[in-house]
Structures are given as structure tokens and as C-alpha cells.
Length: 288
Image (cartoon, rainbow, N blue to C red):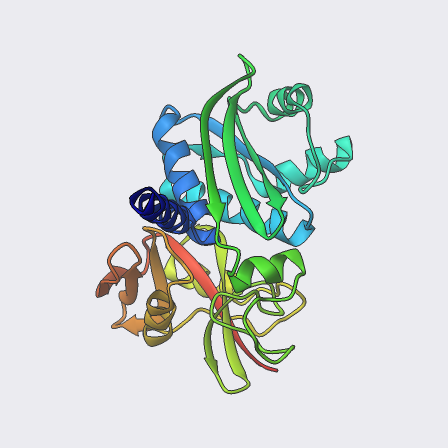
């Protein structure tokens, strides 16, 4: 009898451990969902990241934007532009966080000329979260690829995006690395009450244009700028941006070149031709 009870305890512990190991952070879940989609869909296909159903507009918007940025920067799929999607959504009176039927997705896909629609949702089960993303074939109305995982219920970013109190004890107005900043970016640096946040800029630009687009107002703030090579490395070290893009820094290297950094391995280089198009991050500092 004791042996049976011991075996039951061991199996229960192993099951709980396995469940804990299977949970993902939100950014890792988005990254893996994007990888599954780009692997499963034919290269060069036109895809639209349509919506993500959740209880929070901020959470849904974050997932849609991050998925769109990942797939756009990978360049394996032709991703429908955000402005085009917003136009269709306004015409059809849909919301990014609202439910959209398969029939409506087919209709929107045809309007956009997209072959695949990417959508998903977050199901809250007590304090646990089930994250699902799938891609639907517009013509056949069938799911081509599906991804699902449990998210960590203790992640501060999830709590922030859902408008809930973080599990960790901290001052009510304090932010942690990875939290959403007041400008809508991700906090990648904090020192006391001083912070810095970063946001991705969709598309690719040469070095001159990269500085211009980085400085455009966003989230109600006009103090965004292109990070220096040291600030760019600080973003990489923080882990809040995880992709394989090559990003411009604002640090020049002679008349014709500038420093850049690859985020798949963290390698910085000073030989970036300023005329070459690269991905762009914009940063700003703030105090709380």
C-alpha cells in the first residue's frame, strides 16, 4: 500500500513538473506560433493577421502586431498591410479583439486578396491561460496549421495587457522589464524610477530613413529615436525583442557605413552600408 501511495505521489509530481515546463512566456508563444505558420504555409503566400480574441483590446492588439511584425520581417510570406486591414475592419465594423466567424474571415480574406487568414484567441481558465493561433485557407475554409500552448500565469506582461494586478508584489506604479510602457513599447531598461521602452517600426529602411521613421510620434509621445549601438545591444541583452532581424543603430561608422546588430545571435557590425535597408527599433526614456 505504501509503495502504491509513493508511486502515486511521484507520478503526480512528475505531471505537475511537466505542466510547468510546458508553459511559455507570451513573447515565446508568439514567436513559436509565427515559426509554425511560416513553416507550414507555402513561401510567397499572401497572409493577413486578422484578429485575436481576448478579454482585452490591448492584449489582442499586442499579439496581432507582434505576429505581423515577425512574419513581415521574416519575408517568407506576403503580409497584408495594417492600414489595409484597419480599412476593412472599419467598413465591416469588426474589432481586433472580437470574435469573427469562419464565414466572415473568408469574406474578409477575399476582400484583401489573401490566401490565408491568421487568427487566434486567449481562453482564461481561472488563473491559467490557453493561447491558440491558427491559419485558415481562405479558399478551402480549412485550418492549415494550428498552435496552442499554456501561458505562464505569473508573467507581469500578461497581467499588464489584461489589465490585471501582477502576481509579484511591487509598487502599484512600478514597471518591470518586458512590461508595456506608457508609449505602448516594451520596457527594456529600468534604474530606480527611470525607464526606457522600445517599439518595432514595421518595414525596412535605409539608414537615413531609419532615423526619420524612428522619430515619428507614437503612443502620444514625440521623443522616440533610433537607438545607438550600445542602446541596441542593451535591448538585445534584455530579451524583450526576440527575432532574427538585423536592426540599424544610430551610430555611424565613417561616411558610408553604420553599426547594426543581428538579433538571432547578438552580433554587432560596423560595415552596414547606409543605403541598405534594415529593420528599425525606436526607443524613448521616461520616468515614473
